Image (tube, rainbow, N blue to C red):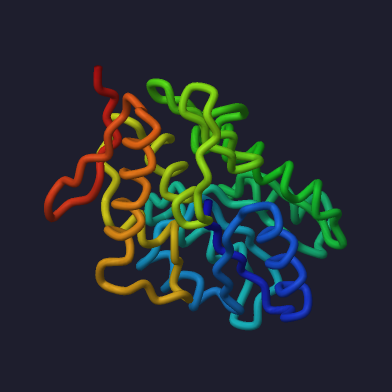
Length: 224
């Protein structure tokens, strides 16, 4: 899962990124509303953590802009503004939840997961397709009862495909979720990880298959 953190306090942003990364959540960062808007236009995120007090305006304006553009991106507001009227304003404009600074990182993660579950972007338990199962909390992948060792990128791709089993996952979405905007994937990076994951599933006699849809992306299909 890759999210966007919109926060102008560099020390806080660094601490949040480190804490979320330890919990298998990848994070891109933006320091102002305009950068966040541009990043949301070129990358697909699972959610955004949005501070309201930004150097180029209020985060409320960014929420209104996103919702006016019919962008359904789940938004969790993180701010020092704890007054009821501030919370109500954000929620009325389309924020999905609100957490007041200073916050506990475990509560932040719990609220993020709750927002994604409500949006249908995150399931609460194991993700399964055929005889393959992934525990999204630990990142452990199993074929029947056999544990399959994956690299971090392979696990991210497996989770993305399993969550969308039977649906085509675009190459762009895979690149965004695996690499974000900061890592700069090579032209065939996703193909490399898809190939490695496909071989591991085949070697373990999984009854799912990763198909390459030329020019579009990838499809995880259950086979008999």
